Image 1 (cartoon, helix red, strand yellow):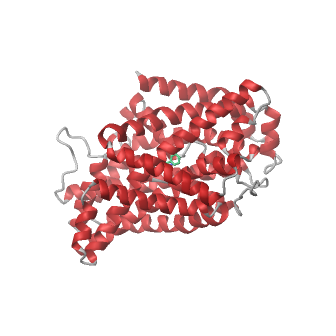
Image 2 (cartoon, helix red, strand yellow):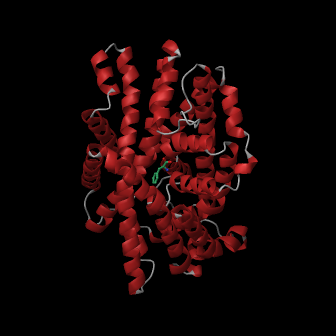
Image 3 (cartoon, rainbow, N blue to C red):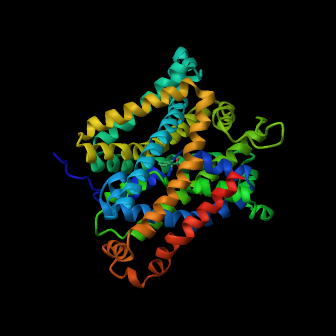
Length: 449
Ligand code: PHE
């Protein structure tokens, strides 16, 4: 028997859930380090520009399709037209989106698990459980499998509870906590010697970098990943919005929250790197580049925390709690993509669907951990460099070409009766039809050269 569809109970509930999905490791780790290695303030300027000019219209495409169809990504795209080839194309794109969401979650849960391990390790040290601490610090297969399993169980447990009691309730609890921890850490780091050079490196743009194609491409990829686009997460969250909610305004708020959070995270990470530098910790590679990849999070920052004495271990606990929470609220949105398909297309109950999908994704994570060298980066590249932008184009095409103008207008005017007279309506439909797909293709082709 069909189960009643969930719905967000309030605007703020939706905003915190969508921001929870958007704000993740991509904001706290990806954005600041990309900014650091790509011209500092120049990256920030380009990123903000692309987030509003390209990612926001694409986000609107997903939210609108979702609320119009009120269904999971496959059923939604399939049902936009009665034409049989459009239906088949919709089904194909929907299945691809679910697959990409599943694979993103499979690597995301591994990284999120590392964050949990780093969170528990200083706690174990405080409790003088030296064996546990050593085990948590050692990157063994068993440790990686266990912490990833723990993250997967937390994610599935929240999703099993449904939209209002699971996604909304937990995002509403965790997002303010996340912001409070971030602000506390920023204040602490900014008063350390060296922090100001970090701020300068982050905020002063190198104008010569502004038109660098590599920088533009990285900023676009970052904007798409950060706003959780192309895999149906925003589509499914949009499908749980009430008819009375104003979609363009919700979209702007989510984009502002996401970019605002990324910007604020930069105020923590960049100064922290320079504080580490001032304390004699190596933060530049031999070639003179800033250490930005996993080594930054798992070596440079822990070395910095160690050098801060007993306060340092509390700072470490707070920092990795920040990372784990950010990862968890994004992971739940990724798991909701396959779970909504199981519930709506195969009438599986939500708790069973959460266990089955979560279990399957955990198995994929285990395979990745097992063949880490060959699989980890390959899965990240396949899903985020190719999958997300290509699916992003497809979703814009569905919103712009398959849905008719009058259907779009009807959907958007539900929460905003005057929409026809707004700048948004004058620009967006044209934009999502032509400009977004063309610009995404262009940047994508650039990346293949
Ligand atoms: N937006 C998340 C982040 O910044 C990652 C994510 C991508 C979540 C795609 C859902 C879908 O970390």
